[in-house]
Length: 393
Ligand SMILES: Cc1ncc(COP(=O)(O)O)c(C=O)c1O
Image (tube, rainbow, N blue to C red):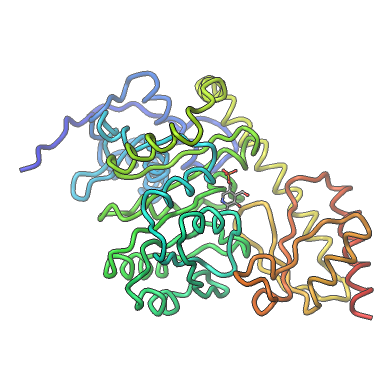
């Protein structure tokens, strides 16, 4: 029989002052308790009900906070036992990589053989596709709609019996930014369980949510250990930091490290040390708060630029992320060409399709708002509309 781990009875947590959502501030407080050694490896946390009572918040505020820490690899959730701090053995499931890209590449090399199939969302993320194809795997498109990946379409793809992996961007579908809802997540999980297919969850912009909580990763509710998780600091720090990580079963983690030693020898420990120090003194949390505020303002500016224009753009406001997916009913390849002549570089929808013919995503654009200042966004969008007007003529 499995023995219960020691439980911490008097975990003194508080919710630090600040303007982020309460659950995030609570996560911060738990991280601090871990760093200060008030919570140790293997220890079980008080129940979420008890923590909620102690902190004077709702249980539904405590749960996402702990789920976030599960996804980050600090805690693990055990059905029936609640949450506990990962022990040494669990830490062996974490592999630091040169961004998500390397994690995807290494996992593809380890898990796939030539002729295997990988189910991918279409539209999707071409950089990941290239990594998945490197080992000779064949990509099988799964439809997406306004709610993200369509489970029926996944079921059809899995029927071949050759699919060995599902690559998925559930938080903000790439490129359309849609968040996969709970019902669909469960349907996807059940289907993959039935067909014994692991899910590679790419959680590339988890920190970037505005005004509401981030939906916890699928990894946070993974009773069968079916989800291989990767995330990155590319969006919250800089892509050139090349700092990402994967959380995978320990034997896979060991193989990933071995292969990684061959491919890139070792990680940049200087960057890791710097980021760890920055986190420990609270600078990283402050940076995230500043970024969220800044990006939310920029998103507002982008929204203003979409109002009242003759092209009547169709779009949904995503809960987070750095982009809007905007459909215009115009030939996007021509619009992109005209925009480029005016100094604006936008990727047309078909770029995100497997065959790039324009059959899918034909009139969509992924418009980023995070990188530029408000005046640059306004100028860029004004030129973009000029390009659209030229094509519409
Ligand atoms: C879907 C997706 N995954 C992952 C990444 C980040 O990759 P990396 O961590 O290798 O920089 C990006 C960045 O563009 C992305 O859009």
